[in-house]
Length: 111
Image 1 (tube, rainbow, N blue to C red):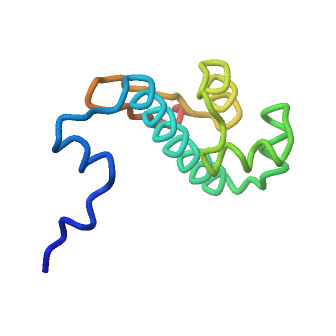
Image 2 (image 1 turned 30 degrees about the vertical axis):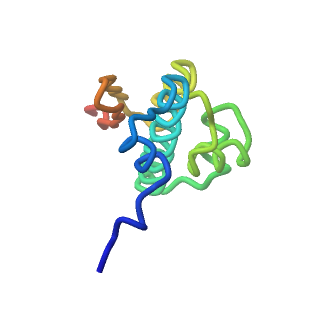
């Protein structure tokens, strides 16, 4: 079976020497970071047994904003947001920025 037809349009363009502008690449990384952060927030919230409403109170926001964060809908991910999340979820946040990709992780604070 020929899987070449499944290639993404950007991959097909790259084969022909066409590349995405740096702004598009940066936006994709922001989206990946927001989605990874959202999963971490959801996982930690459920680990702590908090509802979206309870986390919203800790963040000083609304349950709708918590939901937006958890589904990766908050762009750009700012240092202010990361600090608020870290305090609300009692974690340290580690963000690794590299040309090969961005990663974010949580570490529970020692008691």
